[in-house]
Each structure stands twice: as C-alpha cells, then as structure tokens.
Amino acid sequence: MLVSGQKSHQKGERMAGPLEGTTVLDLTWILSGPYCTMMLADMGADVIKVERPGYGDAARGTAPIVNGDSAYFMSVNRNKRSMTLDLQRPEGRELFLRLAQKVDVVVENYTPGTLKRLGVDYPALAVVNPALVYCAISGFGQTGPYAERSALDIVAQGMGGIMSITGEEGGRPLRVGSAIGDINAGMTAAMAICAALFERSKSGKGQMVDVSMLDCQVALVENAVARYVATGETPQPLGTRHSGMTPFQAFQTKDGWLVVGITGSNPGHWPLFCAAIGHVELIDDPRFLTPWERTRHIVELEPVLAGAIRQRTTGEWLDEMLPLGIPCGPVNTIPEVLQDPQVAHREMIVELPHPRLGRWKFTGVPVKLSRTPGKVALPPPDLGQHTGEVLAQLLALEPQAVHALRTDGIV
Image (cartoon, rainbow, N blue to C red):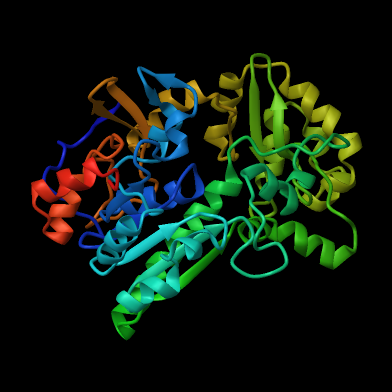
C-alpha cells in the first residue's frame, strides 16, 4: 500500500502542520543539515533552501543519478523550496541579511568560521533579527580543540565510540549501515530548534543552537558508558547480542534470520521460548534462570539455541512464537521493509509525482500527531526553482529586479 502525495503548493502556499507559519532559511548541504530541515518541513515549516547559483547542494551530484536527479539528494530534500544566492558577492550578502529579518530560523552545517567570513554568522544576523533562532550543525561544535576540524559521518561514528562496539565479537570496528553520525545530529538539531522556538514564544528572544555530530554520537552510547563506569571494563563488539540479556540477538533460520529479545521484564517468556524450540530441559537449568545468568553462560547456551532455530524457516518460527507473546521478528532486507504491511499501514513509504521520474517513493514521517500531522507533500525542488517566488514574497521584489539579479549572477 502506498500513500499518494498531496497536490503541489503554489505561490508560497504551505501545508498545515504544527510548524505552519514558521519560515526557515536553509543553508545546509549533504546530509546532517538537510535531514534537520526536512524534519522541520515535514511538520509544516516553510523551508527555503538557499543554494549557490550554478552549483547548489553538492548532494545534487551524488550517485545514483536517475534521469539527471540524485536519489541521495531527493531522499532528504522533499517539502522544501529552493532559491539561489551567491553569498560571496556583497549584493548576495545584503539580500541574505534582508531575508534573515523576515524569517524565524536559519540552519547551516558548515565548518565553524565559514559563515563568519561571509558576514552572515549568528552575531551578524542577530543584529538584524534579535528573535532569530540560528542553528549551526558541525562535526565538533563551535567550541573546543577540534572545533575547526571538518567531519563526515564515519569520523563521527569512529570518534564517538559506536564503531568500537559494532560488529562481530573479536572482529574489526564496523560503521553502522545507516549514516547515524549525520542523521542523529540532524534529528537532534530539529528537536533543539523546536525547543528554542518554544522558549522564544515566552521570551520573545532568539538564540543560537550549537549541535555537534560528536556530541550526538556520545549521547548514543549511553549504556556502554554506564557499563564502563560501573565495571571498568572496555565495552567490546558483541554482534547482535546484548551485553546483559540472553537470548537477545539474531539467529540464522532455515531460510533467513530471526531476531529474538527476551528480557527480565516478563519471566514467562523464557520457558515459553524453551518449549517452542523443543528444549524444555533449559527452563530450570540453574545456569540459565535469569537473563544475566544466561549471558554469563552464553558459550554453553548459544550453540543449543542456534542449532534449534536453524531447523525451521523464519516464517515458521514467527507463527510459533508470536502467538506466545515472545518478542521476535524477521531481519528484513530493504525491499522487504518496503513491502511490510505494518510499514505501509503507518505510511512510512509514500509516493509523490516527480516531473522527470514519474511517481517516486520516499520514506514517510515517523511522528504521528493526532490533530496537526506532518506529511510528505512536495517533491525535492530543482535548483533555484523558487528564487523569484521567495524574493517576491519576502522582499517584495518585482520580476524585473529578480531578472537583473539573475543576469548579474547574484541569484
């Protein structure tokens, strides 16, 4: 089941949502920043993507390219408008300062110092708009010994510790398959912007939001930090296993993989699981009475469980275990995720018309609000598609003035 997109909004008309009436100037590129502003746009904010004339977001050229469009770019830039503006030209800078007076939020994810050199950093914008919420996403934050370093997702994952606990036991460090260094920073930034806007509704004052990819990665390894502080032992990769609960991992089946998670919150799950796999002798074995004891004796227990589960298909195990209330599920491939009925019911794969690609699939909005829901309404914009529209709407520029700016290469 696919959800049809809403009709395109024209002439600045925006979709309803909890952030309706909020205008965002989006100076971001590649992933962390665009993911943040996509979340704001999904919730109804008018996000105006400001891009360099003739170049645009570097993600526009990232493969795979389909009929001239980057699938990577499209994945995080829906629901936005695009205008072009050369901030390296004095005229472009002045236009941006005028635009900043009219908006609520500015988001950027350049290396610290870049926008200061262009004269459009937070101190400069706060002068013209004291109510502005300015969010800067960077690899290491605006302060500290690493502040001026650039960073990519893999750098953040490596330095934040998550790669050291990801992978098979005894194996080399592995990057998490999704770009969580970027995406977690983008999600955190979106939350922080909403918090700053909420505070502004009481104080009337704007502020700067400083989000570091490294900070956000450290926040993700909270349990590993707690275990190290408690035991003094350096956490290591455990494959899909949990450090303190067993069975809590992926098991190979006859035709795929099954994940099972049994904790101490429901003591009845362990005996039911043992009965389901045909090993009732494990139920009262003193080595396996609690999740922690089972983890301590994983070397003896795991081969028994793995051998039993390998005898049947994933579907057969689901039919056996789900009626018993045992937490379990398949390890889905991406095509299987797109076909999952629960994913479809929750509208997490949606389809929109695209001018060159026909109907294109996007991931949906994960937050479900009962009264003012977000939605995926607009396909990603072409470079500069809305330049004239934005300048007319926010700065009341006439078409001939916009044409002159285009001729001069300023927009």
